[in-house]
Length: 447
Image (cartoon, rainbow, N blue to C red; front, side, top):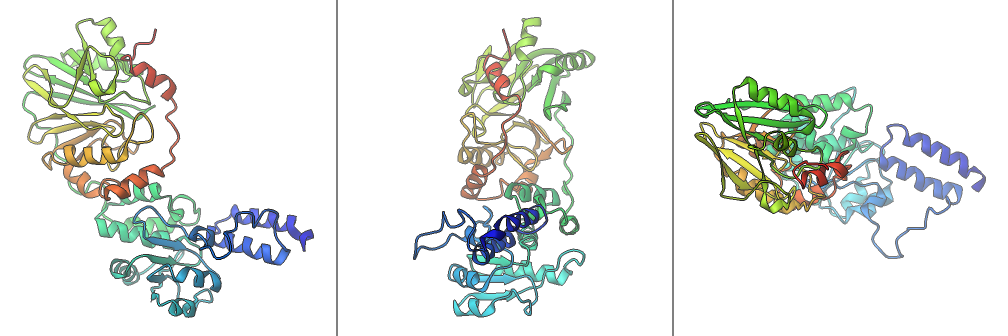
């Protein structure tokens, strides 16, 4: 009766604050409509008679990667029947005698069904159970549905398969699970044991050891700004003492000048990989204090600087030179600076991060262009090349081209998968964007 509608809503809201899956909440709301005679507005967006109900309305999530696997919790028999015709295969992660397993509806639609028990906390899947689920995901046709009771274990099973299938480290799996917003990873407060179990099944971070820089005559320092997680790089020629400063942060100006002095280096150029949105460069301020210092940025960025550079140029300091590679996509004007050596060093800015990449939703960003830049310019460098990014948020300093080609969870996808994933990230804008971008377009000089 409608007199029970308000208490029922309160009960539903209480469940939303628990670890109940989205599928279970949708089922509860559906039952509420039937039992209580309809919640106000509950049918306002119902599909037209005869139209196919969107899978999301039936409690199904379809992560962007791989894009052809649905995830769901418990479903009513009629919902399974409605979904069955849309899937070629169905993996059920409970036992076959579970009351929510509607085998008859699946068989009636000709769906290939595999029952592969995959328990959750406190009991973890055995090695045999984990291997069975991974094998089923590997061989079964698509589109495919993964189903459990709560909609949580299905995310763990999918992530385990993706990580095994693509050779990811635990950290790469962490990045991908966050990008995909898999609920057992990002929302469930009781899924910690499952997350820990899954990570223990994968290789540790940085399994291939990265080499140290080996460029003859190079003086090198990597510096870090904790507020913006920005890396600044000092590169100097030991023979001539000429130096360049890559991506300096205004608030760290004095630190950088002291470092140069202590190393006995004379600053020649301040160069930026792009016009940053999260911090203001100190290039303009340094130039005011030291007129002999010249600032550099990409011509394609449209920003002001003493020298505008582009693909094919070289930035020479003493006996050494950085090769300029155009790697747009995060912004129009992104550059990567490559220093040849054994191994070489690539300063990638925000184009390529360690197990990630820069966002593509502002400043003329384009996910497909970024994908082509990374694969066509950075990933074609020698595999041992050391990758020094513009930022890191997890305490890492560097990677290699080979590592990123194997383990980067964004760049190991297809171009279309990558573009769809980047479009759905919904990240907040950088805190300093309104100040940083205008300032960096004039080399950080604020009148």
